Image: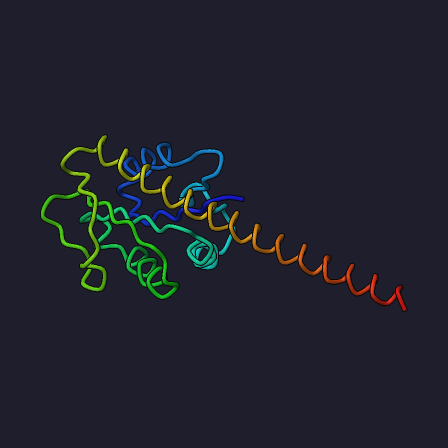
Amino acid sequence: MHFNIFVSYSTLDLPHVELLEKQLKNTFINVFVAEHSVKPSEDLSKKIENAIRQSDLFVLLWSKNAKESEWVSQEIGKATAFNKTILPLVLDKGLKLPAFISELKYIPVYKDASAALIQAKAIADEQCSIKFAKLQEDKKKKDQELLIKLGLGGALLWLFNQS
């Protein structure tokens, strides 16, 4: 089981992306960064759409560069359409989020990059823990349902053998 994070960014902000990627990656967390996750000859649009669809958390590195990127706008639109949790990290002071996600609270990287990375990691870890707890709870329910069915099946077999 993995927790999947999609990072949306401008390639001009790649140094920030790489710092974030190092901070977020661990045994249970997969980080999709197109620069590192898509191989030459692969269909970039399809890979990105699939990665967004499969993501548990969509991290937006919002900057003046990202604001000018058509790719970033499309990725935000897809994340919104797929009803993904969006975590905005704002790189440039005074920059507002796009109107359709302007109500989201963001992490101001421009104030303190180290603290922002730590906060982003804490949020990702919390979301990951929530996902795994839900998966464990779902498994527990399925196991209980199976035990009940097995018990009922055993009782029915016993009843049929009594006649």
